[in-house]
Image (cartoon, rainbow, N blue to C red; front, side, top):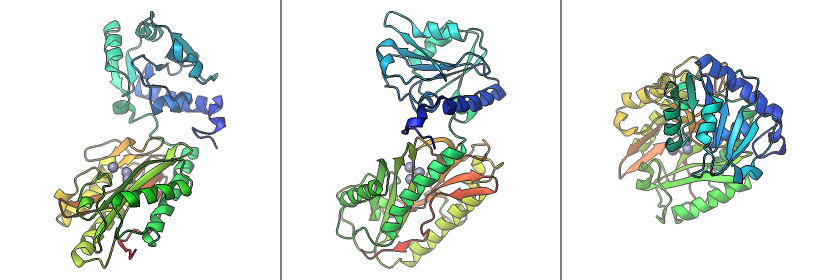
Length: 377
Ligand code: ZN
Ligand code: ZN
Ligand code: ZN
């Protein structure tokens, strides 16, 4: 299996197969060229995790061409660039103009797709050099370079999903002491557990207790967890370059009726979106499936974010499961389904699994208890 951090990632076969697949999508889109700058798209097609600086790094590829894509890098950084027959490396010195070099390579191109990370400074100059060319956002046109996962990537997401799932299960079993500890202490504990189960790094760890659970992206504080309240956990890490992301809430006591009934609505909404995440559906319909359940229960105004985000080598990437997104769900999409219901200043709940879209529907990467578990710890 080939992932970003394993040696066989430099395998040019893997890079060539990725480029062949992207190339076919570019041709179908009517694109004459692709320009990537630093970021995970570049890692995906070259394994090069380039430094982000004011100097331009650009991967320029022409779909269907016999020549390999060309990676323009500042000459001083050339020793850092991994080499592969899958692409050529061209260094530019400080007295050269990389934009002119790119314009020269793609001259005559009518439609050029450009990554979101390309500095406006360079893109505007390229536009000025090529006034007849249309430059288009890569994410708007292709819905992201990495949004459709290969079998190997789907496997990697399932593997890392299992790791985060294990830690969520530990919390639900009461193995992580809660009452009397601060959110920060609990977060440290959870981070240690995420690493212990096999993540190589932790990307984020939200521990939100009591009223803090009403803030979807709460940063853990020194608030001490009390009995009889919600503690919301949302965390994830990386294993072999791929990300996990899971949310579970627990209750430090006996769940009161109003919380129980609201949570039942949330769970039903999450299931509805998982059921709706089938090939051929629009991403906006998946969002609507969750949102309508919550709205019908009277909490429409309390679900204050999109239903989900794609995941892969980044925690948040294309595609986005949100209202109005009419891009179509396809086999190989991997995204979160994470509806939430929040009462500002009081409490909030969210339930999140990563799903992978297969022929017959969405497969959850995490299966630990979906109920609001009472934890007496
Ligand atoms: Zn989030
Ligand atoms: Zn999350
Ligand atoms: Zn998420």
